[in-house]
Length: 500
Image (cartoon, rainbow, N blue to C red; front, top):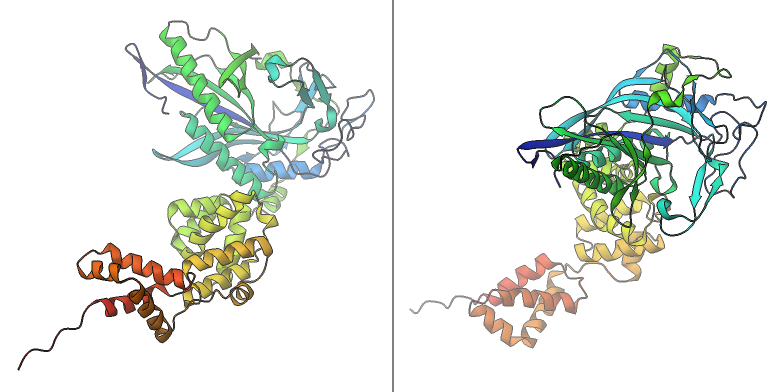
């Protein structure tokens, strides 16, 4: 659904969207202490005096977390600060045991970046205002099935307190919910390629707060914003924004636009955003430099060293796939967007002597169908890339037909067997011997005089029926092209010699 240029009376409105994306970093320990960051541990089992904020406990910065944050900044075309500092952000929620969060406000680590997304209107550049490093809060578990707004009580798990987090703040450059979804998908792909975050939205390691307002088209001033908190799926981001934009436009139509900025929650069951509280303003957090952490000096040599560790990212892979291998744009992006799928695809291409387009067709087709059907991760796939390539070689050589190759691939997927063993043991090799097929065709023609007469009378569909009968008789093993050639020769009557 497009929301731009929605006419309200004689006024056309557009949405202005900015995202604040929170990505947990894949470090083994927390950002300011040595506690583990393992997901799913028993509640309150990975805590210590530092992450619980007990008196006298002092933080010590995790160097790897800082390196990961710098890598993210470089990948998103940011300027890396030569000096950054940590601040205390004051707020009073039960999931924050210190009653403040260690974050960066006055001197963030990364600024002034951008990310390009491909929209229906073409390529769009979205600004990255800043990326800063901070610590996670705890996790509040609400009891009951009615969500946060109807919970009977809440429990707190402090295991998550102190897990390193980067907050990536986009510019107010997005206009449609679909663009916000594309931005988030692209960002997740990049972070996973870097290895700095696993991007598992279902586990809360990637979350998004979406800020949205509406304004008359052509105006530069921003309207009052609503911030939709803690969206944890691409679908939720798009649906919540679509609802909120519609709500705000209806308020504008009634002459009662938002009077104050507010924080809202997304209620999945009702498909609505729900008012939570007024939106806090920066001065309310009373930021000030953390007295327990010194400013961090970042040398250009260190930044260059980190830059050399950045792998080929999705955009570069996409360019290589389309230019070097001739993949269709859509196919190239589907593969390039997922690092593990791209690595598997390239391993098959490396072992296959044919066209990479063939590999793309099979990876995005039958192989992806099996992955989705069984909800199997690439890491757990039993088919070795070399065996996948061998199957495609057998298909190209005519050893198996296309339908038989699908059957072989499915057996490989579930058993891990190599294709040659499956073909041999199940007798799946394609029959291309002309004499053998001529005998089979003759038997089919003799058994089906009706379709033979229909074809000779001009009913073309009868030909496909006869091909199908030959394929059925051979359990799909007959070479269909050879069968078609033999049938044409048998069904077209020979010309009678002219009378003398």
